[in-house]
Length: 410
Image 1 (cartoon, rainbow, N blue to C red):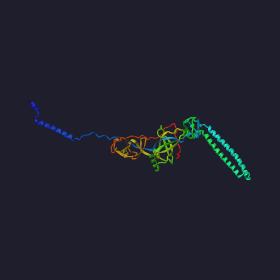
Image 2: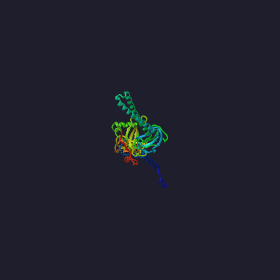
Image 3: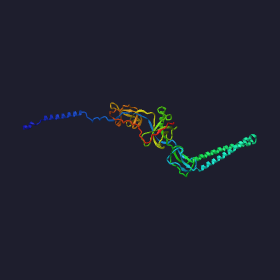
Image 4: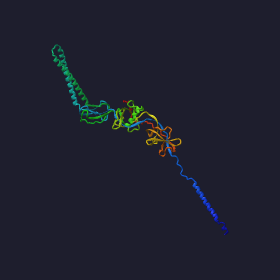
């Protein structure tokens, strides 16, 4: 009993222990209330790719579709009517100037020529006789052996005979031409097409088409320039920034359907005198030598026309540009890694790089990737990206000869 009473806790001590526990809970609650709440850690600055502008020597130009045409082209027709007798060429062949192409039945024209010659001989014989009569009458007139009236008649007959000779000579010449025209010849050196009519058919003078002939030693390059570009170029000419093709030699460049770039050259030799109201374009033409006849009439081309002189400018990737209400801008990153909004004046696009005429400097760091995640004033983590070296236009080798521009004739 005494042992048990030794471990018994009295009521006073129990109250003290409970009060201590309550005080401890109050202190813990007050400490928890005074402690500031902790949120998630702040995100790091966004990473962006930056690059420096590239300085490059460029040429402004405009590109247009074009096509080739022969400098000389004709539809071959006969000058006389008759039955077609012979074909004297192989279809698709190259022919020389004056080469025979067709022969029309010449028998009728041979007869007309022979008749004209006979009439000429007859007229010449009559003139010889009347000349003798005139000499005799002239010797008799002073002695009054012949009257003045008879002398005048002899003189008139002689003059009439002289005129008849001239008529006969003209008839012979016409008959000779018609006889020669029975052989249809090439007007110039070139390439003939297929025959359009077979022997035995009637050929009508200056109406029936026999074949076509085109020259290939020189080729025209035709292309149309839109009205807006025409106005812009004319303003530059007035300001002295661009040479006029009418007063100086202007070289254009063109490429064929299977070629990269514009490896061939021609010289502008014609500018039309008005804008076509139906198409709103101005027609221009270049000309070039085609010594090995590689270019053919009717080929479609891509024509590049240089505008003004080449100049140095800065280029940035096209993807670095943003648009704000029609105004182009770029984001720059300064030394404090802060984003700076910068408006720019843009130039032409070259192989994915946009020329910038104003707004940036050579050492600026231009954001080229991640534009959607930033705005002006943001802190960013820039990462450098080396630009590829500017492309240099080098024409690839071809088995065909390089065409040579001819002198400007405008």
